Picture (tube, rainbow, N blue to C red):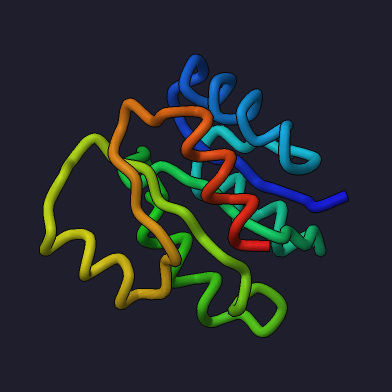
Length: 119
């Protein structure tokens, strides 16, 4: 079964994301970017990471930057979620290594389909 990491600092949003992603894989959740990085540093490997862009302490952009610098996580597909819609921001995030960028509120069906297509 595919392993998916869902990361968001809003508990309700995280539950919705995890429920949607549960249709395509086994979901591990993290409440912020630093928790996500700690999971990966501890040896956890994921087939896809879905994370919020704007979180306290360590945000999604920082997690992507960290992952791209780590041999075991460099090629893991990342989907970033944000409430901000901007073509410039989208291009910046894709250039950093994210595979996709979705705006909130996220359609759970669309998210599940997108993640399934990245495996």
